[in-house]
Image (cartoon, rainbow, N blue to C red; front, side):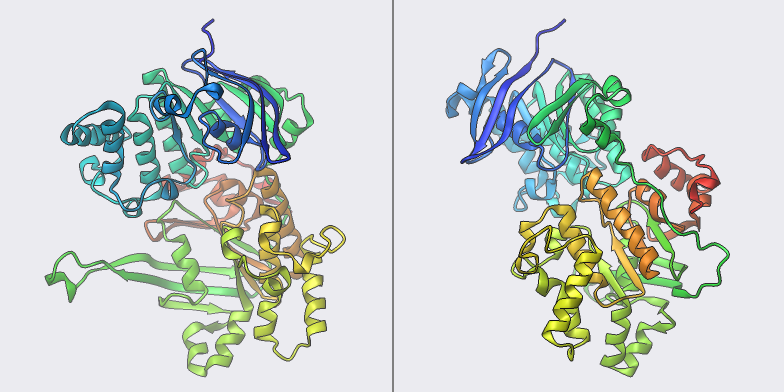
Length: 545
């Protein structure tokens, strides 16, 4: 048995008077893949980043031994030699981790200049070589691109290339696939696995994605509120969990609980016929300035959404899902016809502002990230009541406040739970609670349709299950129709009555959830299902209410 490469023993972390990590101990052996698992606030990222003293304001106690040396006792100058050389980090969101002012090639080459002492030409050649190793298309050209010019998957590959430039013995991967769609997630996992094996590199991966743990890790450490509650081999922990919290995480897969409206006579709340959305391609020369070609983000999309049903739209990043949603919301000009409750956006616009206002009241939206979509300067009362002030200006302050309180109660938030609820601000709530506030804001006008744009992708698995259960309950209570955009097949399985699959701006497959998920016809649909680790032979009765 080899000696551990990294040993964490009795780790305690404080921020002022608050202790967030309590006596954590575990180890990572050379060439081993260990997963730190837990919900937000469990201490995963704080523990991993504290290994290299990357958490400002934290008081760290205990031992962090790397190859026999206690990093906790190293002076900053000696620790600089370890950071980025022996131990490298892949951060969760590459768009914020990469410098927007430099090309990705320059940022990777900097590692070779600083850590290896190479000259500019040699460092650049090594940067391109590392990008090629991550199988990024056209590595020479991508090296000259800025982060915003790359897709999410390409930016993550660039981050991996930068981490590998130092040829580390230990890689800390902090939620490396959370922001990616299912196929890209699988590609990044396979890439990390191959690179880890070829270099015999140890990996400590921080995640709340249990399917990722099953696919990738050798051992797992389960954290709850800064304490290790269970650890061991992945197969053992996943099949025979001992701690109730581990069992809770494993039981957090969304459950299908929707009304089966099949056979009912229902009207269509959305009807789209041959919808197309085009963008002008940026001019590459003066000649192209006046004759720029157009890029078709959505092409000839036709579909219907019936009252009380959920239409799930799935596809990879760049497939046109969100563009189609913006067209449905009337936020983008589109070819073809989109009718909301029998009225098209051009018809409402021709009648005037009052007609547009009435139509917008009938369709509302819940965004992916509640922290970004809720104003940090507004109280909960103002956030939820803002639409009432716009659509029902004659409503008195007391009546408006009563409506807001009633809707907050309907989404599971009350003054009894949260004293002073109406006067609080978004930062005073957890991610799941903020999403409930966002749902209350969307429902306050009693719309017919909710556009749900990745409503749970930013949430932990247990919170995701709670929010989906809430949406299912609200659909039954109010007869809502959902236009659901997601790349999570578990969410589609739990929520959708009907499904359309998009690829490169076009609908490649459509049908009921049982048809699309149970017997996919298109190869692309099958690849999405396989990448999601969901069996494609789901029985038809699984979709009965």
